[in-house]
Amino acid sequence: MRAFLDNLRLALGTFLGNPLRSLLTLLGIVIGVATVITMMGLIEGLRTKVNRDLGRLGAHTFQLTKWPAGGFGRFNWAKFAKRPDMGMEDVRALELFCPSVGLVAPSDDQGGQKVSTVSKETRPAVRIMGASTTYPTVSGLSVQSGRFFNEVEGLDGRNVIILGLDVADELFPGIDPVGFEVRLKGRPFRVIGVLQRRGSFLGMVSLDNQAIIPLRVFQQLYGKERSLDIDIQAKDPSLFRKAQDEVATLMRRRHNLAPDEANDFELHTNESVTASFNQLSQVITIAGIGVCLLSLVVGGIGILNIMLVSVMERTREIGVRKALGAKRRRILGQFATEAVLLALLGGAMGVGLGFGLVFLGDWMVGFPMSVPPWAVALALSMSCGVGLLFGIYPAARAAKLDPVEAMRNE
Image 1 (cartoon, rainbow, N blue to C red):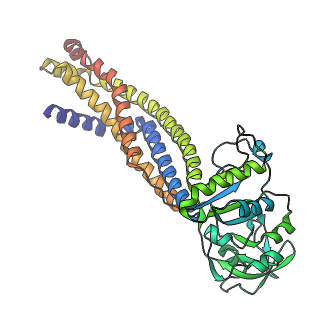
Image 2 (tube, rainbow, N blue to C red):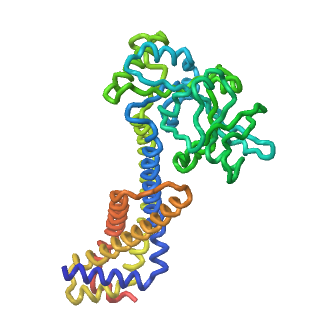
């Protein structure tokens, strides 16, 4: 233990004697470790935010669409585009032939739209959604003021609209817009409600920059030849799996799929979207560790160089110590400890920098980012391993020096 403490003291002395050289040597390790910490913090934050944002789908709610879950990952979009569209005929079939299904809520949306009043106009970034009267119940939407449109307004296709808070604040700052008129694609709409604030998805896309109109009106404005997203709620949580099976069986029958053919539709639940995100995050994690390893190798080469220089500069000191009785393993331990300590110091600096970047990202993107403890442990362990791997050769070279020849060195 005493020998280890002596080696640690000598290693610290070496570092403090050449701080600038040591810091430049550790730059690769600092960058590698900071990269891993930052990416792990980002991924953990995204995972937390995804789970929170997907919480609007209840325990017994799922979605039927033609597109893959969440848009995470790489897909052959041309292949999915060839799938049959979901339409109102499918909605009616689900209501008639799936006894475990309670509510069915078709919807469609169009981004990049403008909503205007006589004197003001939003930027062309509003998401317009066409929905059925059952949509708020199934999706968990709540109205802050006013109301949602009723069944008569939905079936008649009346020009009524519910604004998201971002749109309401932009067009009617400081006042309740309920009862006022707005225009969408040149058509007048009466504002009957304002949605409760929902925040943003993944800290990037505002969920409040939207407006909802009856689905029939939406189809008049944007066309009927579009695929609907169909939110489905089971009659009871205990019937959730059965409802999914009934929907899948019905849709396969409607699409005339053979028993050995894959589904040409998607059933999304919270779990399926989360699983899709986890697959993407695993790829990002592996890529981040790869970048870290590359940076650590660069840092390791720097440690190798500085330790070889240190051995050359201290050849006479090594000779004197060996002449006074220092054993080879003591010299080996001293230089190996210096290399590991240098790498560990670089790792600690990288962890600090990584946490700083995570804090900055948390402030910028607006969702909580957290670094898992295993990422810190992994980064520091890899740093120590690199220090030992690249420091063992200079340490062995120092331990093998002949004391007489070493003492003659000037």
